[in-house]
Image (cartoon, rainbow, N blue to C red; front, side, top):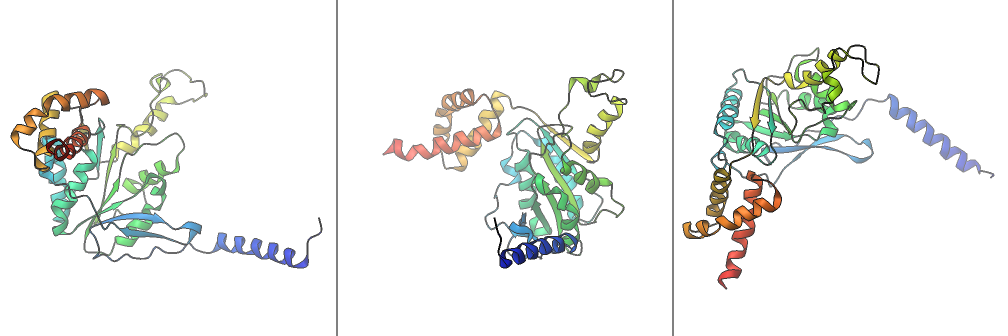
Length: 296
């Protein structure tokens, strides 16, 4: 196929632009309007046009008083957050354990409890963890105190975000910024899948690893860089019912209606195979939402 001189020119120009993009520095993230919100999300622009912090205009309104049967975990993370906003030493926090037990909600509730003292929240997806140095640089000169929030964190073998987070926690040549902490949630304690072969420290695995013990150390080294570990466990039946009752009351249900809802709350949990706080919240919304129809 014969190409015209114009096609040849355009192809060469496109190639030149690609080479220029490879050597030019990346666009710097622009600062957001800090007054628009207390919570932000890290966003990537399409086409590599630069990343930015997006204000969350309708952030979660959950409060610390809304979280029940996690008193020990709530006490520890609240104390750590108080130290942080008071400009005292504080730790990065890893919250792990059963799903739906309030890990993410606890972090959001801390924001609502301490936003008036300068606390701000930045949510970062796992796919964007390589941008952590840019985020830290962006907020380093700010007077606020920033918690970088990584939700539902887990990694597979070889993922780039694993190394980036590890360096951000405690491995960079630069000192950690005084006004930034990382709070992460995960269903995995060690953030990476564990295999039976990992326990065979004195046997050579199928992959020929000559030092399997060192491989295991590498897998657990990330979680050890969090100074504070908080573990969450499945709720007992009475705890689940109490949480469902709390949310029903928040929707305006009377004590009589809450008592009458107990059998349906248990059936709801049985259908979902979980007695978590999330399931209790979902049941309360469904049950309370139907009450006007029932009364009509």
